[in-house]
Length: 244
Image 1: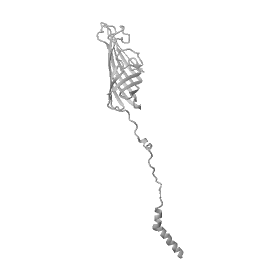
Image 2: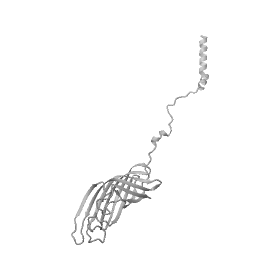
Image 3: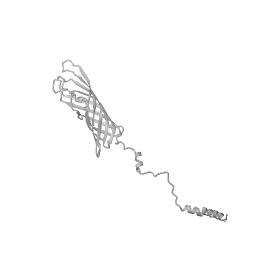
C-alpha cells in the first residue's frame, strides 16, 4: 500500500510544472490547411487581353477608289485605281467612316460607241465607306469588314454640242461589301496601306441623246450583280491614308 501511494505522488509531481516545462521544450508543428499562392502563373488567367490599337476619334486623309466618274463602259481592271480623296473619322476603336469625293476628265468616248471616237467627258461623284475592325493579328495589322456606297455622273464636257454622242450621260450607283486589311508602317503610326476584296452591285443608267438638231434618244438602263469591275467597284481595291 505504501508503494502504491508513493507511486501516485511521483506521477502527480511529474504531471505538474516539471512535466509542462518538458512539453514546452518539444517543438510542435501543425500542418496548415492553406497553401501559399504560387508565382504569377496563377495570376496570368486574370490578366486583361491586349486592347486594339487606339483609333477612336482619330482623323485621316487619303486616296481611295470611287467608280463611275470616268463614264467608261463595261470592262476595266480587276484592281481599282485610286481616283478619289477620302476623309476618315474613327467613331470608336473599331468603327470608321470615310467620306469619298472624286472628279475626272477624259478624252475617251463613252464606251467607244458614240460614233465620234473621242468625246471629252467629265465626271464627278461621292460616296461613303464604313470599316469595322474584326481582329488585330498584330499591333500594326487590322483585319476589317468594308462596305461602300457611291453615286457618280459622267457627261460630255462643255463645248462639244453638235458632235455625235455628245449628249450621252452616265449615272452609276454602286455598292461594295468585302473583307480587307489595314497595315501600318512599323514606326510610322500615322501612315497606313489598305486593301480589300469583295463583291459589288452596280446600276448603270445611260441617257442617250443626239447631236444638235436631231431627235433625242431614249434611256437605257440595267443592273448587274457580281464581282464588280467596269463602271462598278473593282474586286480588289487599294488605298493609302495619313492620320493626324
